[in-house]
Length: 203
Length: 247
Image 1 (spheres, rainbow over the protein chains, first blue to last red):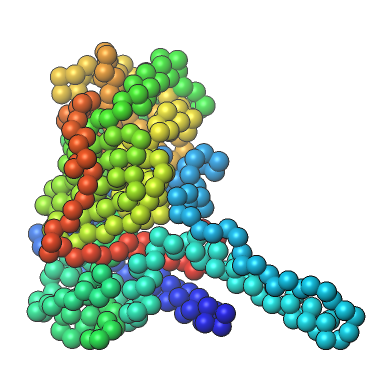
Image 2 (tube, rainbow over the protein chains, first blue to last red; image 1 turned 180 degrees about the vertical axis):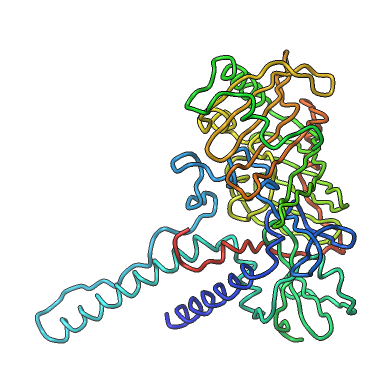
């Protein structure tokens, strides 16, 4: 259980950190129609100066408005992630069996209750976390294995970097090395982005 | 974008209200019913959108997209941006695969359900763009009728030689101009969407170059095989990593 708490806290902390990074930079990637390749394009490219932003709510081409979300009650909402099953049942609680009136039993009851509450809280926390990030497991595993230590850059910026790159695949995911720094790539805000991470295991 | 003005709708029509004329409603129902009844279809469209810079300068970006849909849950989208970027999206009913050719990277995420559910997930949760995705949704009719507070038929209008009904639709967020072909195949030929609540009120537009109601829907169209040298990456939509809190 302690391991679970620690893992959750670590992942939560990492998520906050990643979110802040994502929010802070590379805003032009949001809403872009595809992975930017920069070069002659007018993409600003992850904080590089002098260009123009491709970012626009209109790039999404939604007839509903900015978000394609349906009104509540109308079809699939953000909270309804059908198709990604997660066991609904919680682990069986210990059978309390016969409870006597002695102090030891009452103490056990209190401990059981405390444990139950703790389990409930942890279950609830896990539920939220699982619901939110089941589909995000690949990323989570990567982040868990490779701490994000630097900024997110756009594909355009990545392509403009002149360093000699090498790549390795660890656990199915590609890592790139560039001038001593390690990078991973993700689709973020509709575009291909690269993020500085620590070295993958074994490197 | 030549020929378009910023607020063509407001200049031509009465003040908005909860009002959709019978002719407009009939045209919309005819169109949505017809498209929804197609077990498979494909279209190619030229699309563009305005990115309004902080200075107010409008710049248009765009792409050509070929979209193939096979109900209930398969789709293939090939996009080529004007700057050369190419993206392939394949929805096979079990997984969503995205491949960016120029970057030579791809990502795959499992997702089952109806095409509408899968598209919602792709657009809302993964925050990936899929312009005019509503055309492939099961609830296209709702999008174009229930979410609209005002609708009006401007009149007949010819797009690329095809006689259309020119409709305007409106709700709090968007003004939509639609050109629906008259005749036995009431399909959209052009759409212009104005995002009224966004800075600079940018527009999105699409002109449908080709509609095919008997497209190639062989399994290979919906099978993603990444190139051997492509690198697998992941989806990391930033809002999805907000920890724990309400969405």
